[in-house]
Amino acid sequence: MSEPVAFLDLNGLHAEIRDEVDRRWAELVSTSGFIGGPYLGRFEERWAEYCGTTEAIGVANGTDALELILRGLGIGPGDEVIVPTNTFFATPEAVTVVGATPVFVDVDPDSLLVTADHVRAAITPRTAAVMAVHLFGHPVDLTAIAAVCDTAGIALVEDAAQAHGAEWDGRRIGSFGVAAGFSFYPGKNLGAFGDGGAVVTSDAELARDIRTLANHGQPAGTKYRHHVVGRNSRLDGLQAAVLDVALDHIDRWNEARRAAFDVYADLVPRGLIRPLEGSVAVHHLVEVRVPERGLVQKQLAEEGIGSGIHYPVPCHRTPAYAVDQQPDLPVAERAAAEILSVPMHPLLGRSDVERVCEVLAATLDRLS
Image (cartoon, rainbow, N blue to C red; front, side, top):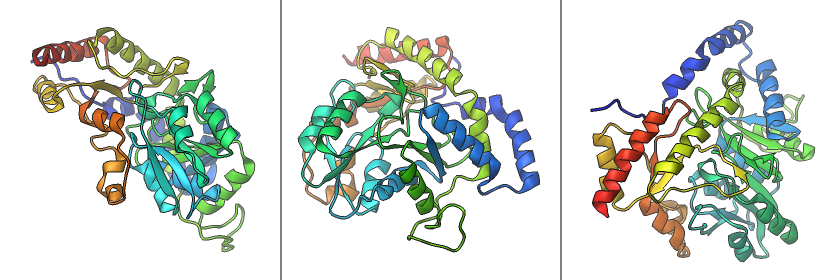
């Protein structure tokens, strides 16, 4: 059998930055700067600049980032937040945790992203915000969705957990909404050596409030002065040091992802999910709609090719939400049964992608 093709190669990526991370960790350990400190400050400043915002707040994980944005906006019981059902569970989870109600909407059948039409149709007098999810590293149409939000007077929040460095209309993702939440889970395009997340915004007051909420309700520069009931959600110095090193490589890594996707785009016979025109995608995941997914995945595994499923159950059909009366959202429901994630990471060579496509095409031909 040919050499295996890994779905994700974290060991290889970490090897590229290991020496610099070791050096910075040694410096940090020597100063015991584990919570807050210069490494966190440096990364926050650089991440804000990279995203085209004035503020970045490091937090414990991407889910906290979304929750803290909603809390900072004052969203809670009695409010509704529009959420595409085709997303990771953390998106609606953040809405529910603050006491608001997620209103699930369907997605476009080609891109599998939420659209302005979906948002417009779901707005009610209780709607407070929209979670625009840049799924797979593919930006949504922010121009159209922002226009709907502006007209309705509701907040646009970007869930950018899979879209580090992506662009829409020449601007970086994270700079369009009132705020955006990022995850730095190790497998992300910009990943830490553990959990981590960040909020980016150009609203100084919102940034201040989120910093307060993330630090037990203590305003910056104070101690034991808890102005509100907050929580403990901090990005520690060790992870900030890793992310600061990785940030020097993210554009190169994203370009390698785009090169690999271009090969998929040329060779996948059918079913490839492509980004919208006008976007610069970063291809966190590569998704192909296939019949008899279990058989296709089994064949890839037999050939040493890794794969995954993102996500097998739409959020509105998960047990946590299915107890409530939920609408039929047929596009997402059908896609959930067909979507297969194939290998994608910056170390994929052209021959690796060609082999994946060859096996995939042969399997699909046998099933057709």
